[in-house]
Image 1: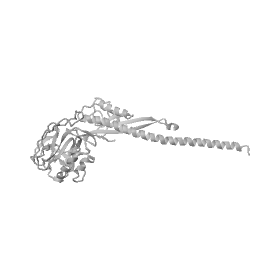
Image 2: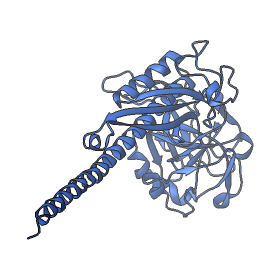
Image 3: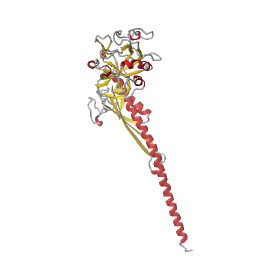
Image 4: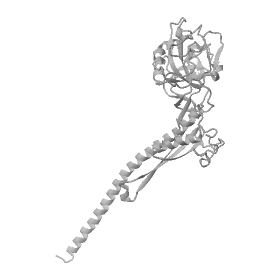
Length: 383
């Protein structure tokens, strides 16, 4: 054997050990990247969900302000901070308009850097046109296997915008109310206008009962002098029970919008059990404006929808068709205050829906416009 042969063999073994060690390090690095990648993805999703919730918490506080309950910048900030903390994120937020544009203390659209920071409003109030919150969330989290390749921590980020405003869509009951609720006497006299409706307040009883305020009996009248009419919201005729129990989400770009009617004579009885199954629930009902509610189109009529109201359902009653339905006339219930509306007479006096108009905040599409009496308010995550 050559004297260098033994030395050469040892060198080769040493080279193999070095390559093996490098291979192990590379393998561990690859495993670390895969495992830390999954960890980073989970944290990124969690932070984004936290940013969404934080923005929505701020918008919900703004929505209460739009509903007439005085809310301040400090209260919006507290809601934002509490939600960020519960989601384990560090958050910054600023005010936006109803479309998510940053605004300054005068309510004008500005660059994000010039927007009013939530919790730092100069006046202490929610700024004019302040109908949304843009929240940014971050979370720095440590690594486990990533330390093998020199990464001790990563930072996940998320941005979200939630806005509040006048309801522009949602899960609607397939009926339409006029801005002025009328009777069915056929005399054409309009009843109480929308801006004078008694908007009821939540129950203070334990357990909660019906709202506190005036209960209205809204008559089901034929088109011409109608108080409400059945709508065709899904484009399928005479399936009103299905539309009541399984409403489809609807969104309009803006109001007013024309909506086709369904056949009230066919739908009223079909809807009775379905609507009564919603007793004690609040539903969204489209409104038609004063000039376009009286239409003579019959089953082929269209209604000029100008907005959405919220209605807490007591009952729906479809009588024999020849009048005299006592449930559709002013009367006292043993557990309710007197129901307030003109006693129904004439055409359509056998069918009605009773309940309370309420100021209601829900999740759904938000549109432009001032929040009026009885208007429904929505909160929408737009980013």
